Amino acid sequence: MASPSLKIKIPVSDLVEKNILLYFSAHWCPPCRAFLPVLTEAYHEIKKNGNVLEVVFISSDSDQASFDEFFSTMPWLALPFGDKRKESLKRLFKVRGIPMVIAIGPNGRTVSTEARKLIMSHGAEAFPFTAERLKEIEAAPEKMAEGWPKNSKSEEKNQ
Image (cartoon, rainbow, N blue to C red; front, side, top):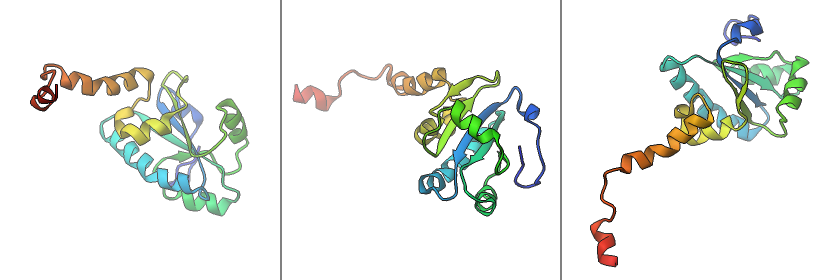
C-alpha cells in the first residue's frame, strides 16, 4: 500500500483488525469523480468519530500520471499503480464496473459488496456497513414514530 502524502509503502499487515473499504475507481470515470467527494466526506466523519477505518484506492487508470493526479486528491492509501494484486482483487470481488466499494471487517471477512450504495444513501451513518447496521438505520424512523398518534386530524377528516 502507498500513502498519498508521504509517498511511502505501508505493509498490508498494518490493515489487520481494521475496517477497510476497497475503493475500485479511476480518474477517467465521471461517476467515480462524482462519488469521490461523498466518500471523502464520509471517511472524514467516520474517522472524526474515533472509528478505525482505512480506505484503499485500487485504480483502473491506464497510466501512472492519471493515477497520480487522482490519488493526490485522496486522504487514504492506494495499491500502487500497476500492482498485480489488482486483477486478483477484481476477480475475487467480481468487480464488473466502477466505482465499486467493498467493505471488509476487522476479522478480514467481506461485510458488504454494496458499500458504495450504503455511503450514497446514508453517508458516515452506514459505518461499519454491516447488515445489522443497515437494519438499525432502516428501523430508526419507525422507532421515532413510536408513540405518535396513529391518525392525524387531516386523516380522520378524510375517512
